[in-house]
Length: 516
Ligand code: NDP
Image (cartoon, rainbow, N blue to C red):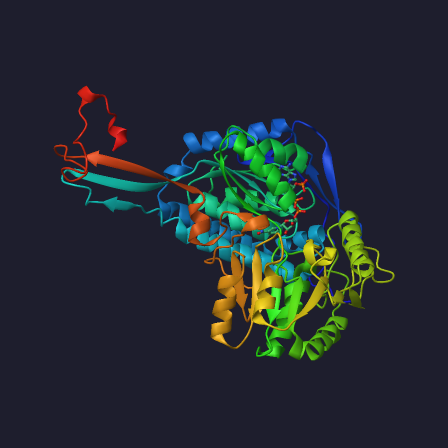
């Protein structure tokens, strides 16, 4: 087996909390051991954080926001520092890649892509640091001008999942910092290593102490306390729909605004007129990319009945050739799932598919003799909307196939889900693409491509997939707040023409100026 990186066994890593620009002992003293999901080796220890650690980190971020230089730097200065951070992430690409492979279990090719993606996102966010522009209204009547300015929202609490630790960090942290916010990040208990590494690189790049804090620990303690904390101004959360609901309940206590990027059950719709070679590639990428542990995974494949038999046969043949195993091997297509519990959940879903009558046409088991948490590429045909595997997010290498006859039926099936994150359409007919895309209930639609994207393009969900924006200008603006400044520079003038309004209020009649 060919190792992706020479000497793949790294020294076991130990991380303290990262608060106020340096590693600090947490208040709890305990640690969380991370074992590699592919071979069980102990690879990292993270501090088992406490509410007290969160309080310290929020206080550090608050001080850095209210008194520190970061929000007061010019956009150009912030951009220069964020570009230095991008350089440092790039320079540490091999180390960060190994950490992601060891902690997540994902194939090295994908882990490397994540780090490259983190560099690209950081550079793009740097460019946005110079875009804190507002608007000026000059036609409000004689003697009145209004400035609508954009300010950093304040201290941002960021919570990330385990499937793309560095990449999703980079969808949040550089955007928040570009806006002038300071942050407290809680990474997943399974995959906290890259967050601590990148926080240390941020200090090296020149991001001031306290602007970027990381607190590791469990969601029920650290995550819950952080998202309900009265000292934060905004929460950006990525994770499951179940936890997202809890986070939104927490933010409602303090009326803090939030953006929640949640689960998905995306449809991949293949029309008969599609470029079927490209659609086969896209369907495979759609479901097996990142072990299927991907929020925008195209886990439900809908194929037009006219081309279904041949198309499905090709999908099955190509899936048989996928290599499952050592994630450090450059030839591996599917690595290890995140942990034993998750593998058990995925296999329970597969069992439910069989029990409920779907046709298992490939896979369904853990590969023989593998020591880690592996699952074969698995394909079900003849999946019906009432089945568990049609409705629930599996988050593993499991594809459900359903055939359709009409555009109407395809749209109805695709929308028959509680989620609304992404959908994919394959057709050479632009009218089909546009009309179907318009009818799909999801924040994101990709046509004739799969698991694609760019830092400029916002990701958003609807329905059970959440709300708010990540990436793009909209993602940047989530970390900002508008302020309206109305300036009177001359004598007061009526707002409405005579007759339509009783006249400007005078102090004598007690009407407040805010009434107009
Ligand atoms: P979880 O919801 O289990 O966890 C996400 C994060 O939330 C983790 O850091 C977790 O901590 C933390 N958390 C858990 N409980 C709480 C709580 N009460 N308060 C605050 N934070 C808490 O998701 P997973 O990590 O299992 O990630 C997989 C899910 O993420 C899938 O549903 C997937 O679709 C979704 N996802 C969505 C994306 C999107 O952009 N829409 C992108 C990627 C994933 P800990 O694990 O340490 O306990």
